[in-house]
Picture 1 (tube, rainbow, N blue to C red):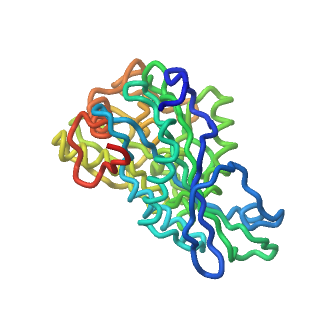
Picture 2 (picture 1 turned 45 degrees about the horizontal axis):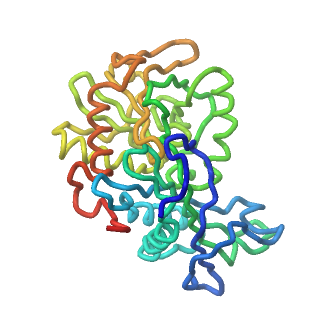
Length: 341
């Protein structure tokens, strides 16, 4: 029985749901884990996560498809990315098959919070892991907790996706051999000042350039870039310090296999931007946010697609990927994990 929630007016915020999944790592092994009711976390005041930010996370969604199934989109890729993140922060890897099982169990236990098809809302799922025991010297923890909670969220853009204005940021997001390629809490902590500053200056987002040369496009604080050339190619920036967005990787397949577009995943130099026809940001939350204008210290780069609506090819990419997610278009094998028929 669906919860009595005003689905069409949900914001993008946290709402406590009934159950969450918890598993603990102690004495070198993960326990079986299970669902619990209590949304609070209790740990030592000296827990490694509180002292040295030893935490990694993921984000994905469950939603109702056109034919009434409840599904997730490519959770196996979230599992492998969390494993990569854990290795980089010297954390034990949570088994990838158990990760997918935990997602399924958490959604099943909160099935009444999955919004109905057509509402624009989804069930956002947040798996995360952190170092739990007391650590005062700088070193990895010995005990860890893996948790999954979920919360219903409204559409990222109320009333449709209007193109946004972003600025070239003076801060660096990630060092060349740093942690930009993993989903660690610390990467997001350092982006908070930059995004608040951008908003204060009247911009929607930041464009981060590569820290070494400041000549190449990297990403924003929470999304990868996509560009469309004037001759209709999809170009996505390649860098060792960009988070490998699951949405971006999926859009590259959609572009090539469904829309017949040429796809280039390569280094993108900032001085190329003036030659692109369309620009967007892609990620789990919004799928694609169209970008109408980039401001580089007062100098404006305006994309031909304009400030009124998504560019035509970006729109096709968006419609095709959301069509696959919502069951209107047949998905490539293995992309859709059915939780409830």
